[in-house]
Image (cartoon, rainbow, N blue to C red):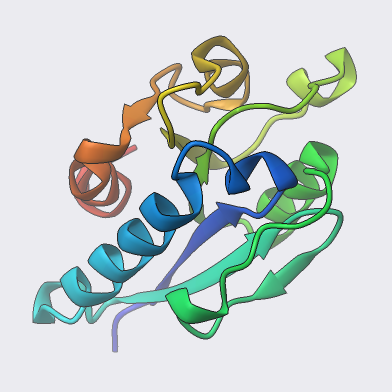
Length: 150
């Protein structure tokens, strides 16, 4: 019996995700990943979808995604550390990162930049690899997260 690896796909649900078509792009990205993981090569992974604003909640599907509130990046980092798994964080990066949060060592967190106005430097500051993936490379990010030996 093989060990199942926990994978979290976390969607930023802050109010800024209502701007510049980011809500539609986020729904598309969530659906894209949802269809892609139906491939049998992901059977050894337990992949769950979450939404983050001032709290983290389980997301049943892309239709349940609705931006509201403010992103609590500290909550994200604590969640990722607590799960001990691997995470993709889909966000525009329009949030503040306190220095204490930057120093928090997260297991594996790969950010995916969503929207033409994304803040790459903020996303890079929370990336465990130092990389930020563009939205059009979300499946590359997922494959790197699952199979890239990070």
